[in-house]
Every structure is written in structure tokens, then in C-alpha cells.
Length: 203
Image 1 (cartoon, helix red, strand yellow):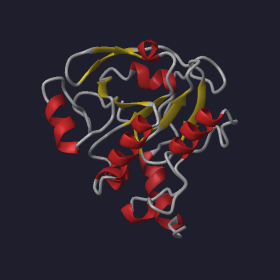
Image 2: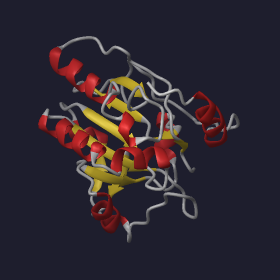
Image 3: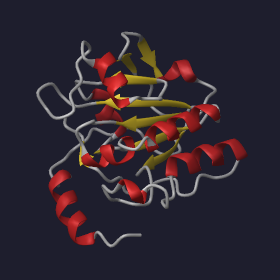
Image 4: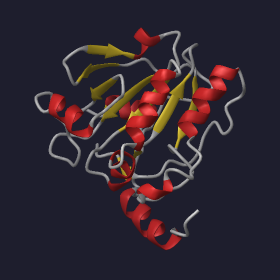
């Protein structure tokens, strides 16, 4: 692990202000809140339509350096493909409000999918921030994993290396993949929660 404490203590204190408040209702071990959003290709999409499958929710902001860490060299796209190959549904969610960094309009959404080379099942638009607040999404990325019964079983960081350096991805423990594999093996999710890192969600 790289010693990035000085950088992160400044960066995260700036990106995650103490005044952030979310009307969080998503609780690990309880049913994940259903939601209804529109995908980049204009399709209505709900969590409930994926009942019976493991679902990963990834909060996304293409302008965030922590997000760029995973997308710049294709690591996130590979992870999304791996999840799909394991039978999981990966949903990328943008909760950036209009006029703020990372906002994606319905018109621009198809181009955003292409430019990022997304491999997730869908890019979902949440410009009001309602779904993000419901889940308590604080950062980009912030990961939530829901098991086939619809129970929220993991929430937190995508991996164990809170940096913006793409070279750190390979040696990190990926918590999203760990949760997917644990669900498939019928094992407890360990850890079930971690502290998320990244840029603050731009509500």
C-alpha cells in the first residue's frame, strides 16, 4: 500500500465536507430500497426488475480523479464485464445535479456511455439525487451490493487502496468482486461495510 496519508487527509477533507447530509434509508442486512430511473438509452429501469440476481450499484462522476483511476486504463470496464460473466448485474448511477461536475443530461447520456466505454448493464440518471440520498451515496465511486433476495449486503469503497493512482488497482482487494464471489459461494460477506473514498457526490 502506498503511503498517501498526507495527500488523502487534505483531498478527502476537501471532497467530503462534514456538512454533507443524506436522507439515508438503505441499511445493510435489510431490503435494498427499490428505485425507478431512466437509463442512458431512455429505458425505464428499476431495481426490482433484477430480482433473483446479484446487483452492484456504482456511483459515477466522469470528472472525478478517483473515478478516472478505474476507467482510464480499463480496470472498471473489466470489473463490470467480470461481474456480468459471474451472473451479476452492474448498474452505474450518476447523481450529479444539473450545473455541477459530472452531470449527464439525457441528451448527452448515450455519448457518455460510448466515451467511457462502459460495460455495465446500464448508466442510470439520477439528476435529482433522490436515489443517491436514499442509499446514502457519499462518493464517486461508492459501491453497494444487493444479493438475489434483494438484501443490501455490502456498502462502501470499491477497493482497499484509497488513491487516485491507476497502478494501485492491481494490488488492491476489490470489495465489489469479493462480495459477488461470497454471494455465489453462499458465504458471509466480509467485510460488509467499509469507508467509501473518492469525490463527494455532487448533489
